[in-house]
Figure 1: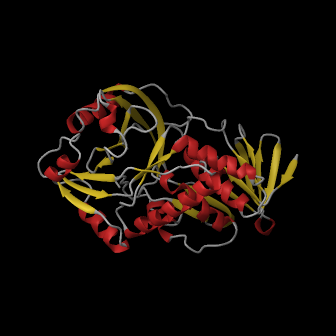
Figure 2: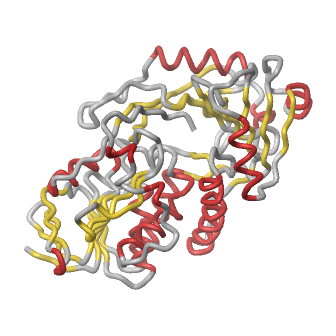
Length: 386
């Protein structure tokens, strides 16, 4: 059976859902194919919360965060429900950090984003929940916010369907053929979909799809772990009483105030093992839990004991920059990758991917090209701290 659409989207995590919504909102016919069931827990778009923040290591990313805040606001208006919970964001740089404070300050200044630099005593006076080593510097920006992961992704899917997009779960792609000027064919199950373009947002399964065209992106998939802690006094960890925080060192950790329940969520960034996404576990890693719990006990001693952990995947490019580009030699095939920090940008990346699928390149940076050295030079050394 063959069906025709204007565009095919492969993958219905955050980026794919945002792209399906954006294309359908513009009046295009869209079919979106998800390898598993909608809302599954095998990828990186589930659970409760993600960080939305202005603080980043380059002016280009900071400018993109400005767009992200605007796009989340538009998504809130379209969905008729609040999505952004502003709690403030605090980046904590210990003495001699592995992540340079100067890069962040310079980038925020370049874009004109208000921020404050606080010494350890000022941090603890403002948020006595923290216990920090002498010499710690805090970079605070008051627009730091929480956005909902699973709920936000489901909303984008619902909005896409409301604009006529066809969402098909349990539909792994088994073939992709570039037809040149005639478009592209995508096979899934017993159906062949013919369209003018395909947008691949398959995350850890990206190369399974692109392999049908003989293209490969150097990706590393790790299995990460977030843990929820139960503070004896949840009120002191409530939004407004505690900001988002990120420990800007190696290892790097991050955490949230209480959000939707009386627990504090925290995790290590890029601390998990490399895995095959088809053969990964969902069991708690006790060594990772001990490493995180030790850091939380030192820096947030009132956060309490860990009560549950969950696993999620990171799909990492060697430079940890996004991919937002057409496949070289295959202009009908567009690829989107969030490199394990893309959820905060999901509505924005969906908009940019929709632009590429419909023939526009305005606003899409060469930084996110598939032809950049980090993705084409086998000697490029991976670095994931951002």
